[in-house]
Length: 91
Image (cartoon, rainbow, N blue to C red):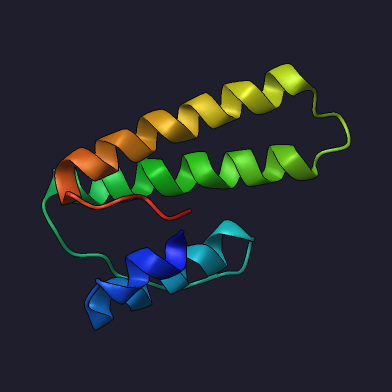
């Protein structure tokens, strides 16, 4: 699904999501994101929630319930992102 989304994005959005994807898996990435406070907060919340879900999946202590909780948090953050940017959160 992410590939079909990327086809319609401009170059800056592609770079942003590639950078966010690197951060998702734990790589240190220096990035400056400019936008309104609402836009920056939406990106940060969605990225943090996606990272928490990723970490939970990898955890040996994860249970179905903890994964569902993290997935719900990620979905809520993704909805906020989508309402602000009018595009799907790909992570």
